[in-house]
Length: 72
Image 1 (tube, helix red, strand yellow):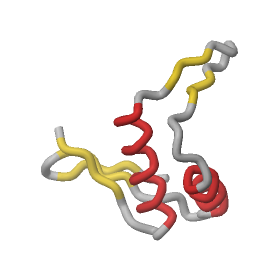
Image 2 (image 1 turned 60 degrees about the vertical axis):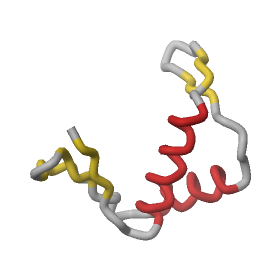
Image 3 (image 1 turned 90 degrees about the vertical axis):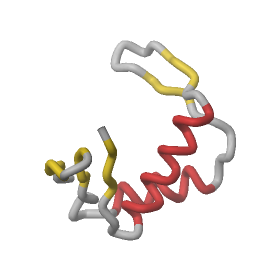
């Protein structure tokens, strides 16, 4: 995955190998309830619904090979 500066923020390119992104997209398509973040120490935190929806949109775009940008 490549991150490059853009005039209004950052542009994040999809990874060249989309295999993991495709797996994640399928997983998110089959689950409509928010996920739980799992930290490296095992701590769990429920992902708020708005953040979950953004994650689904970002993964769907990258699955299609599209770049994603964020505004500052």
